[in-house]
Length: 453
Image: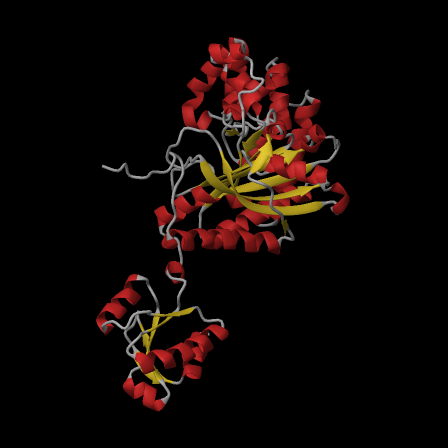
């Protein structure tokens, strides 16, 4: 018995109905990107591992999909590494390429390679798949799409405010109720100073970034395992669990970090961004979250995370400010800020809440039935006129019974059917039927086009 085909865990097939929904998401996001002045680029699915490694922290490096070198990939490999099963060092010798983990690091590489061609500040958007060797679970996939927008070559906090407006506009169009969480990595660095562990800032951010998933007790256990003292953990816990309104949290932070130059700067940046967002009318959906860390090491300022209010799922958008990313590629002192929409999680949210407009169920708006040789020929003429007018239309290819053809129209959610029978053929007209209301009328092709256009 033949084994049934399968696909890798954490990946999915998408049929026509799913793709119509996904394209609705992509098109909505793309329209807002363009509305805000962003320009599209694309980068390869593969990057050199030297480009990717070390940019996402130790945990991120473990999640990189590495591509085995072609040809005699074992040539020159140390046999002792094979014998010892030393996978990390083996991978370094067997693989020079990897699948991209996100779109931000490839973008930084793109900026450095094409710097002479770009006008700064450069505003780019990119909609492409990324891959992570993560454990698949609800809302978490190994292959998924990101929809990124970045501004690079400007330190102005206007960019952060603009991105918050962009996020709000996308969510408004998709009809998703969200909370946009804000924090600042400088605030977290100031907190690390405050508790006496400034050198442990990466360990602290990686751990507290998991607070929503594993809870404060498990976070504290992880911090302890990284060598952070019990006294420091005891001082940290009440800070990252500050409650109250965003305004009161900000005041508490300002008081706590008064003696930290870095922390004070982070608070000032938060004040500027929050005030700008409030002027845009976003105060009701923005919340200061002191525990928000976003574990990626390259963030240096504002950090952003978006949660859907009506569905239990991870963040559906995230991002932040990075000041040093291009520096690792030989182009220092270029600041950037960006966001990434998780299209796959947004897809899951819209499915759960059934927020898709009914018009996306079918790409075809008009189906011509096929009732005979002469009728088919006339229908083909009308079909071409409809398409020339920009109406998505098709003809049923087989001369089958009308009931079968109408069932096809219903099954594929076609909103209108055109019937050219003997009577219509003689009158150079067609019967246009609205499949939702059942209403039908005899019209010319010009009249049908005018109604559907």
